[in-house]
Image (cartoon, rainbow, N blue to C red; front, side, top):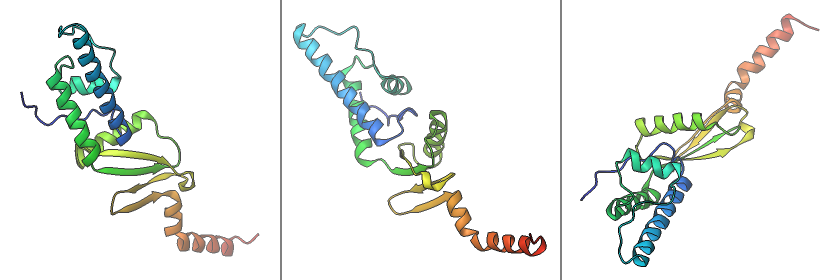
Length: 167
C-alpha cells in the first residue's frame, strides 16, 4: 500500500529530533524482525513503549507500527527529511520554552514548508529578540541590532536632554 506524504509532528523540531526518531524506528523495526525470527514468524501483538514523538508520528499519519510497511514508510520519510528538509537556524538570548517552540514551529510549517526543521541556538549577546539564518540569508531582529540601527537617534536624544536639563 502506497502512503501519502507523511506529516511531521510538531514535537519533531530539529534535525537531531528527526534523526533520533529515525533511529528509534529502525531499532523498533529490528526488534520486530528479531522477535519474529525467534518465534518462527509469529505475528507480534505488542511493541516496546514508543517515545512521544514516535507516538505522535504514528497517530497523525494513521500508521500501525505493527505493520512493516508502515514502519518502512515512516523510516523512508524520515531519511528523506534528514537529507533534504529546509533548515532554519534561529538564535535567542535565552532558552525558549517548549510551548513557544511548538508555536513557532507550527507557524514556520504553516507559512513556509511543512517539512521545515529548526536548529535553535543561544546567543546571550543579542539581549532580546532573535537572529535567523538560512543557507543564503541572515536577519538580526535583536535589541542589540535595534540600538545599533538607531544609534544616532539615541545620541541626539541624549544630547538634547543634556542641553535642556544641564546638571
